[in-house]
Structures are given as structure tokens and as C-alpha cells.
Image (tube, rainbow, N blue to C red):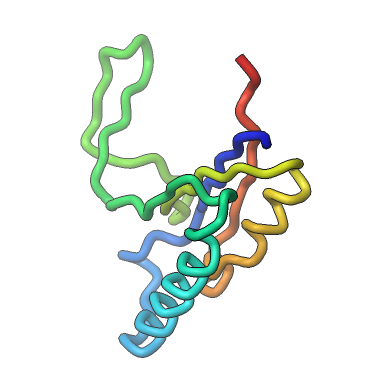
Length: 113
């Protein structure tokens, strides 16, 4: 098995609004998806991220109280997966609900040490 990280990028929730029903349905879809994969050897861990953070730039001495964004897009969360191949990890990530609200995922393999 190889180790992968799935990085979720999505519109900033403070600028992209949804109805309470849409949000509840989205959370239900995530709970069902997480329930499907959490009992397998493929899903190691993962989490949504808060909208608070710090950027450290330059030579490490410039610290700002913000998160990285491109336009209104942010990194919203991550998954740690184990899979036999990039293709298998990609198929697992392709089945998650991140795409419902305009998000997308990037699957990357860890370098072997």
C-alpha cells in the first residue's frame, strides 16, 4: 500500500452562501461517505479545516494572521489515504461530496523515504 494525501480546495464559506437545508444535506452526505470508508484500510485520517490560520512567508520572519487563498478559493480540508495505486486513491477521492459546492480535490502520493 502507498500513502496519499487528498487536498480539498473549495470556495470560502464566508463568501459562498448556502441554505440551511443544503448545508444539512451536504453534512449528511459527508457523514455517509466517511462511514463508508472509515472502516476500511484505505482511510487513515482527515479533517475539515477552520477558516483561521497564519501565513509565514519570506525567510520565515513575515507572519500574517490569514490563510492562503486564490481569489475566494481556500484549502478546506484533507484526507490521508492508503491505496495500491494513484488510480485507486483517485477513485476513492472522486466518490466524496466535496464537489457538491464547487470544490475539487488534488490527490498526491507521499515520497518514499
